[in-house]
Image (cartoon, rainbow, N blue to C red):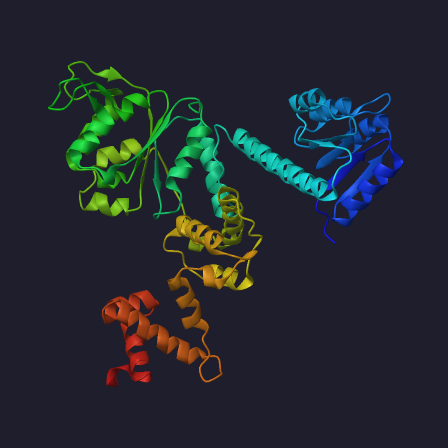
Length: 453
């Protein structure tokens, strides 16, 4: 039987100790018992216990000394005091020193069981919280990027190298690949790590609102400007400003930003004197920036100012090695957030995830696992907990026909038919999607009888 926890029982009365050992072992705990307070102190240094049950009054070393020593060596371990000399004063004294509970002899077995169970659970919760705090402290001023993909590892090495150079950076990649996370990674590994990091989505504001957010305004600059407002560029001075979806900026806003970067100064709306700033700019876009440059939607001079170093985040479909790693990372994360205990992701779910293209990238995977943790009523995430479209993909791809698995020819025919439907029956586009020339597509259409349908 799996042990529920490890307990130290200290009682100088032989019969009382034997009874408590018997009860706790019967309930599934791993038990170490001793009649000596001195030996108990030694055991505390040699073992990690979930809970300690100790008598209050003992010769040489009493329960209070054991409690105090336990607080020094293992603050997460809960201590339950037991005594036949219960007084209000001693109870208050024990609780002041951090005892979990105070049980008077003669005690009821059900009461002891209940108190020990609660003490073990509380101790483990404290340990989990402590570990979480240690993780937070460990990564304070840092960003944790989970990967075992070789390309991503090289990208992180490059990011670490350029973090100390203080140059501007342009990050490209599809939505959901983690562009802001990479920007934070660069910031928190730079000499600016103790200074502010601000992020803004340039496509989420009108030109007027974006200008106000970036540059700020003076009091009375316009109707409703009752107080002075600092812009994000000014607030980020000494630190880093992340400009997401930079290609969504209007041409006039791009010109204003270019002036800020060139002159290293910002002018609040309504102000007459510019303010000197020291900001590292990291910009990002999920669009093809070269295409935006060709179409003159993005200024070339601003591009060169921002693109001192370029970093490209690959889509999750090109990081298959990371899918399982990230899945279990998100499983652990949302178990902690939702106070759930989902231990596994079923092999069927993992098979679907490994064969899915993830158009929403890492963000989509995180949402899938979060949903699974929220919906699962067992110890694992099953296919029933996946979004409907993911389940449909699995069923459509592997469904048997008249008890048999579909042939490769049947699969090819079904896939071509699906692609044609998705592209509005445009044969040229369909051929490009399928990776074949139009003549080859025409032969396949004739072969499968599509021209007759």
